[in-house]
Image 1 (cartoon, rainbow, N blue to C red):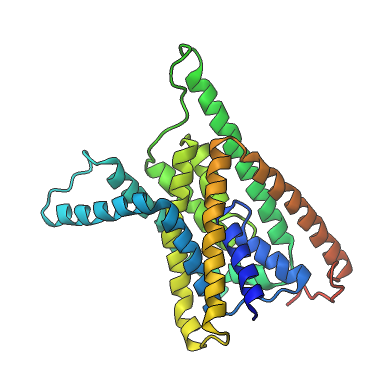
Image 2: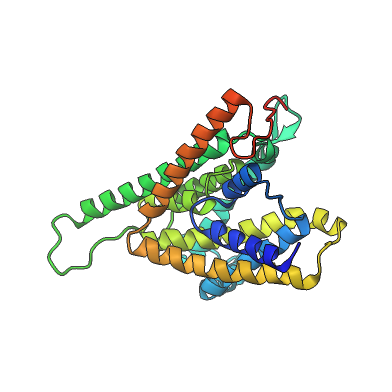
Length: 317
């Protein structure tokens, strides 16, 4: 791998990790149509650390407050001073984040009769040469984003109806409840299972559909991504360390830096687009791309040939 290739991989990872377009879907499609090989596991782990740095750079104040609140909560539990009736906004958000992570354990449940866990199917769908899952998942991402935009606007219209001119307009709830947290967690679980279903897009949309304000839903989605990125890196670390990197350290570093910088810019861009009401751009993009990919997938099933490379496809294994 050259420095330029590492930088390009970092750019792709940083952009698609945070923009609601699905990094897993784009990676799968690039491998299918362009023959771009997935980077080594070690390099992939390093790119995850780069995107993690991007989130922390943007949300370091909120993350720091949540960390302090975590240790404060542990102290209250140890001294039996914890109460669910009186909680600060930070403590409530922390507990809701924990609740949103619970559905991820569903991915590790065995599927009866298959001898595999649920998450193993995600790996199969991403590498089986059949792009129909990616196509329909991208369409689902677009529909979820569209639903989030629609329900958010309808909720605002209902609450702002009859308000006096000059009063602050209603923009949505500022705190998550248990139902909200579980809904977001289930969407994150689904995004981990289906390549093409955007994690950030689905978790953001779930919040908007539930009546959460755009800013709160976006912040929650990004902060929830921190343990998800750490978990993904941790699951791959053992295997990655068993195969030492075959590229120089400065090449790996260039990929990390590009992933962090582009990820940082992608977060700022998405924040601006969501707060200024331009989220529909991503809904249109994923819907159009999803339809194109689904049509291409049907054609490949009919012909048995990759429509770009001309390679023979085997859908039976």
